[in-house]
Length: 197
Ligand code: DGI
Ligand code: FE
Ligand code: FE
Image (tube, rainbow, N blue to C red):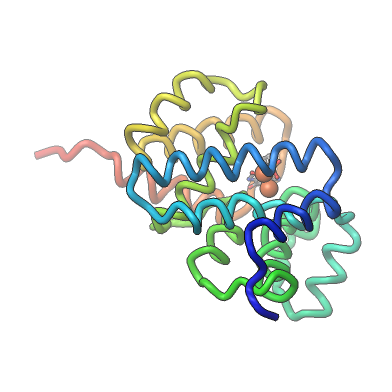
């Protein structure tokens, strides 16, 4: 399939997603574009990644597992137990390639890792991860006002704060933590360690 235009992707998302998720999608796309402008990343890629990041979010957990099985996408035990939270990102990346014709690896990886992050993310991956967390429609996360300011100044510091807050939120609700979320947190924590001599 030829790469769909941004306008066509937006129309497809309007059909595919419920209205709340579609509003969130638009907000993430434009927040990601803003972050790309200030951090000198590719604005078009940020828009496309934002527009498609949750393209599999309205698919049931059961269906997400079966899509993974059919297409040889590996599923861990934690993903199997939390398919909606974790697998929509992996399936989303798969759909972005197969249904929406995206071949840019960086965009596909940004979608794939938008929920857990991963160690040593590209600039676009960081931008999407952060935009998803800070978009104007998000209301409930703690420290949001501070994180929004940080996002326009320092991507790695912002990632670490979001990861810290996500892990404490997951622990407070007894949520199972994905190995990738843990690895990402460790990576960005070590990056910020003060050098002692
Ligand atoms: O799809 P969105 O709601 O826009 O955002 P998202 O893709 O970042 O998903 C956010 C949810 O994912 C949030 O409720 C926390 C959850 N999450 C992130 N890392 C993990 C996780 N859930 C579990 N169980 N384990 C994780 O490691
Ligand atoms: Fe998501
Ligand atoms: Fe999202």
